[in-house]
Image (cartoon, rainbow, N blue to C red; front, side):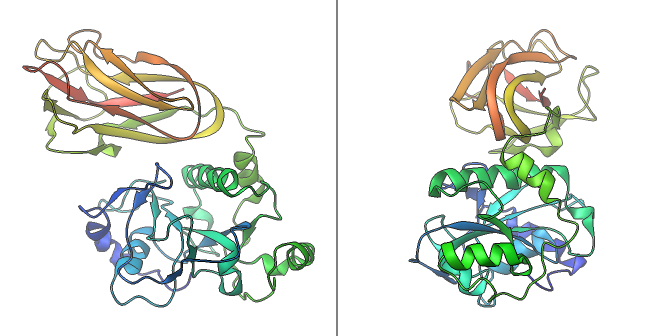
Length: 338
């Protein structure tokens, strides 16, 4: 991807964070953002490998650029944010499915298009600052999903950069096994600063130990109207969100990208109070599906309270629902995986 590096274009994040953003039906952790113009193939020769790109620009602008009704003739399956580098910027590690279904074929790598899937990473060939740990983790989780879905090996013959034509070994393999002309591309991304050792370790769950993740309410997403409070002295961080209990599906969603497949402990923090729900429903995603855990927010405030332990990998969520006994509030403050 080229020339998407206009910093002031981050104002476009209003476009990509609005009502048009919905959960992907192909890959649940991703946001689905449709294309205005169908710049993709509906058929091809099978998804046989996966191409990693760098945007040479910024995530928010890239998302709005693809969604515009006058884009260039290109498309790609997914994109990830590297850094939250402006107040209006989405959270680091946010992942979008950019209007191309897994079953379709994006226009991202010339003659490789009808043989591959692709992902764009916020960042630049000449600057490693945007290639963050959370971006590597989120991207690797997607790659594992695509490997399982399409049946290709999680190795460097099947997970390549847009610059893979520079590897004579890969060119020989691809020409013989992938049905492509391996040298039809001229790009150099993701470049020398992309850490393939780290990335492949994450894809294959090797060489990594658990890194705890704390997610504050400011990084969560909300459906419906959640008020902001700050008066409670036993809160985590500067503030918290709260909502009256009601029979509606309007949760607060905390999301993180776990760096290794393992058994993870999941915890929540809330400021306690008499007007809180005694059955606040936390819905925890994990390898086996999801589990609802009801917690009494009238007590045990101001500390991490365990929701449970589950086998997990990749991007996972904890949702706090307001659908429980009416007459109270539920408080979304912070969630931790460790």
